[in-house]
Length: 330
Length: 190
Image (tube, rainbow over the protein chains, first blue to last red):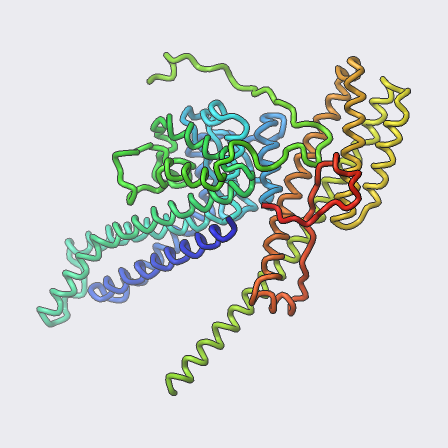
């Protein structure tokens, strides 16, 4: 399991390097046509977007989703304790907990370092999952925090975003004059122009593909580390089954700015979008991998009575009553 | 510059880079495992602090169960005094066994079982035992990573420079085996 995490880390790094090369390449091609100013603009855009995303993202996300902060243990003791214990197991400080009032079952983590991380779950998730499933999901999110995935994903999203923005700006510049037209040489100039046009079209697509590839990779890593944290891959597998079985498209969570952070793709989109364009690996595949990790065992490998004076009590789930079908819609 | 020389320089640079990165990683793991061990201590102390209160509460309802109280109190002082993963784990196992007896006795006193004070202490204890479990897991994961580096070639050479040694896992075996004199610790945790 440790090796799997390490190899995943290497692949993420390779993907990120690919990104930087792409960004630099686009900047270079543009500078051929528009002069060095283009490179400067590219760098400024990237830095600006990075600062916004890294320093404001967690608060923004909480605001966008309408999440409510759990300040004290008493407000949600079970959830609190689970997060507390997982934080100890992962060796990170306890993240701030938020509950998002949303009926679609989902969860996400945010914050650029483990110190200022937040972990949010929807009310729909709390209602549908049992203790072991919830623990699996929380461990998955905790792994994103521990592995600095949020920061990596923010970099990826920002780079993809700034490439798209760069392309947009220079496409406009191309059509509305501008550019270094005094340069002579017809044929050479036309080749450069074609090169610029092609890269303006292809770069954003390539950037997007890299971004979602990184994202999918990180999801697998987080699944593997979650299994390591809980020693119980089946919990997360079963949770994924429940969640993917009834993901209702949620508009708040489907906001493209945060969609990539969810535990499952919030807009569903199974069947319609191909694997290549999705930020999340297909749940069936994740479940299959988790079950392989579990080695076909049907219960915990670990003896839960180990080192305990008291058997783990069967805790009653304090859940709000099931909503009637009429109000949940279809 | 000949190609051979260039290749040689590149190889040397890569080797040095590897050595530096591995050295730092081993030092980090060593410090992390020390810190993780003191985190377990914090949780164990929390458990020890709960016990006098628990004993007093049970005494209030079942004052004549002397033997059980003495066992728990003795096991507690042993656990407080123990030092190092193996000794501490063994002492904790004794304590867990004694506590189980205490709770088995408590089963016979419905008034005690219904008292809010007792229930609260029970919850506290469960919570603490969860946290011991969690911090133990983090410690064992760190130790496993450290031990892998110390044992594997070539990082074992660098571990020698960093003066890093293998550490013991912190395993809590089932206390029913505690009569067996040689409890095996150090079995790799998954």
